[in-house]
Image 1: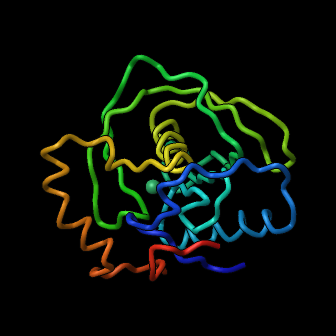
Image 2 (image 1 turned 120 degrees about the vertical axis):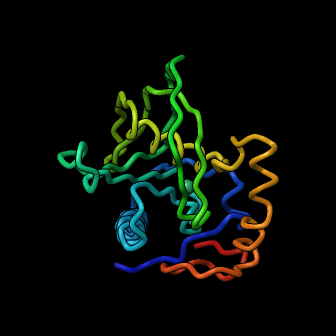
Length: 186
Ligand code: ZN
């Protein structure tokens, strides 16, 4: 296993829709293992493959460190698609390993249903609400080239301009490995 550098806002691969996975080969299995190690090392609870520079529709999450979710096993979602979003929305604070030290309150649907394939390429649907739905929606956005900073209002965008530019130009201390240039790809 290996720690992979995490891509930062400004890195091109974070803005592209990721490719569908057609088979889970040895390389993909290795990637998923490395994603878990990389996410845990950075104290994250969710990660998308393009956050480590891989152009694949893969999301992982692990909420077992959160008290109410401690019995929930780590999850891998391949080729995921949100097929239901509740009308009820809630506001929660979000952060992102690709946007270090920035947190914003974001409104999203409280419940979703996600269609995905597991590592045997078997299709499933999972109903999720609250924090789990939140993490899945955030990571699902990553696989479509979107970041949570796309969802904030103009005033917040103005306030974040400087901090985001500092991240883009890597003028900040991050306590986990990050990419050194914006063209990084695995
Ligand atoms: Zn993120």
